[in-house]
View (cartoon, rainbow, N blue to C red):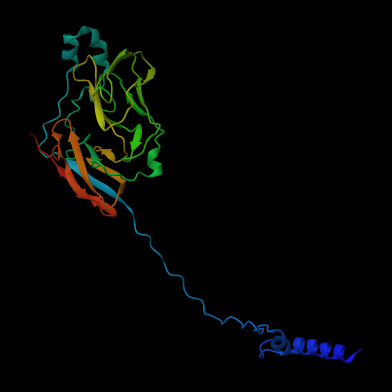
Length: 299
């Protein structure tokens, strides 16, 4: 081997044998390469306990009770007297159950004065977008209104066929279904605002169902009546899910209300009218539970 080859072979051996964490070896100096630096082992860090992270609530719930301490006493219609006035309806009126002959206006629980069938809902300010949960954009269960004999059941109801958040609009899938479970011909006659819900007049044979032709939603209502003068029902039509109808104890609950927004709370009952005035009451909802009790008296 020539002397030049021996010298080159010695340089290679020295470069390979140089420790990795040493200063630049002969090869590094010769060829201008950066030094090789060994990776130091990562320091051992003791485990840290995982902190509990609480996500703040972004929705609110509105609950309350509507009371009517001095409501008029309940009134029942006499089937015999009514039958004498209209013999064509005699058999049906005599067969009617007592609850069907009750004046459906002021139904008050004597234990706590809770008022049934009051409608409580929120009103969105014009030009404001409020969020609607995806779960509240779907309503598959139909609103069923029956006419068993001498009354509509339910007497007060709400239809939520469309949703509107102030910008976008969509169908929920809910429809209004009229039903006749009685053995007699029943009449459904609806009155509403023609701009939003056209009226209709339908004779429904026994044991039959029919979908209502009025399913548009613009926060308007229509009411049902028939040829029996006291037989009527009220159907409120909403384009949002923020509404409730009080139960037998006068209680209501509206879930998933947008928190941090100032909204108008509206309340209505057929015996009194607007319980919080025609303009309602402004409420700023905080996350979590919000309580609003409403007491009303005879006008």
